Length: 308
Image (cartoon, rainbow, N blue to C red):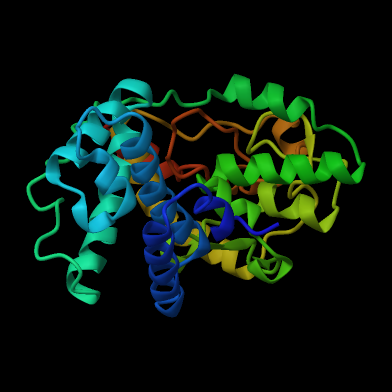
């Protein structure tokens, strides 16, 4: 079902407003605006009309509800204040930006008004809200509910891991197709807002469930059995990347006081999901040092002894 149904948006509006919105929609479609953007623009204009006809305290609001050329600055500011009171400041800001585009179109493209009523209307200030970050324990609980080899379980796990690993938008993951997945490089191509294309980072735990490799384990993310990289030998490109990053990890690790550790039987038996495990060393949380054993003459030099 299409998101934008113009007949429903213009239901109950005056003939003048309906004709203007239809013409504006035609202009937006000719400019190749996304359907979601067009819907947001037209909805804001329709909401302004509804507010003027039902809630506005100004006596000339009925005239403005019949003709957009009669809308004034006071009408728009009253709408913004009503939106802040009944909805939120962020919603009022969204309506402000959409109405700016509508009246700009009336002024510049259609020459129906001499000056936009939005010219001196200030944007509502919004408070910055800190969104809590999902903890690893919470992510593990969610993934625990997706255990299994059924299609919907593998699908849900892949979706959750894509969100967690790449930080994608809801719409970016919802519009993914098989053509956007590259299984050879384990990357995802997202189509974001305003048709921007970006590539998600290397995301084996999120991409591989789509290829129905199930029943394996991966220590990169909590949650038990997932479609991971166990038993797969590192490619030449992965080895080159590991060796290229080794000096940086070693320097960073030495600054933090980290030292290479001795591999344990559990690590050696767990497979090579990470660069650290591929070199046979244990993972230390927050440690970025080179996981390979440090040469003996380096240890002697740090201890102040001359190598024999």
